[in-house]
Length: 425
Ligand SMILES: N[C@H](C=O)CCC(=O)O
Image (cartoon, rainbow, N blue to C red; front, side, top):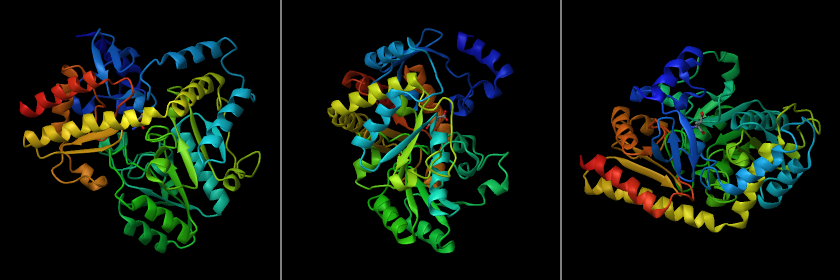
């Protein structure tokens, strides 16, 4: 038994399932999760002294690699002034100005503490603004763990195989309508079923919580048109894609303008942060400017703002990062596709820029149902093979791989060798 096993044995006695977020558990793999001690660049080290190439990247925010020096320095410097004031600060104004000056569809923004909070609050603002109650989400998209959004959710909900969460009263989900990702007709049908009642359509512009599922050509544009036609707001959940696909996130990458956007951990470079923003007249509904209440002692926390603003400024000033991530994605995921072809493996690789997934599915994965058809036992074998060979993946078929600028060509080659090893076995 290693230290990870020891720690897990202790953890399960005091923490439900031994983890503070279900996606960290190695449930399907049948072993203790690796307990992590530190991370640097593209590497992560567990408490047993094992070194892995990391493709979790703290679920996205480590776009520049772990422990990026400028971010670390900004955190240390900010700590000298105290950790939290629960009062207004200059740096949160700078953060808001920076985002609004550089993201055309964000005229005003409010900081919160997580993606879950960002989505919950954006939806409340959308309802307050439109005076409508219903929302449309997509099966397999994950928007955090607030009650109304756990319906047919992706990520850990999908991994656990439970369609919806227990403990959510029916009343909380009665206004949540579920459409099929990449299927505009399913959205139109819901809008027609409840005319003048839908406040917002919320979507992950790239599905990245049922594995990676790219939007088909015309899907996001079609959502924009439908929302305009039915007087409904379009919300892009950019918790994963924001500042990753392009500085302006998926909205810029695909050239479709949402009314509102939600961000998560990426705004804090890994510190606990989220944000929601959008058109001024919608955001002016939020308290104390307007009647939609939303609050938080730690919102705009100065340490988190220092880390986040440093990373965002770096990304803005080095936009070549996005070309680099695109090229790395093509190299890694494109070569994985080649390996599948060469070895006659009937599986799929989906990818958009630095995000990607191998699906152990024999048909094209374009939505929740086709993602669900994946062979999760085969994935577990693959995961274990990769882990034993020094590659740290999310322990679920239904999560994305994240590349950072710290993943060098040599590191990608090394990863591909291990992938090849599995499929030629
Ligand atoms: N898929 C999630 C990230 O967006 C996993 C993070 C978590 O639930 O801990």
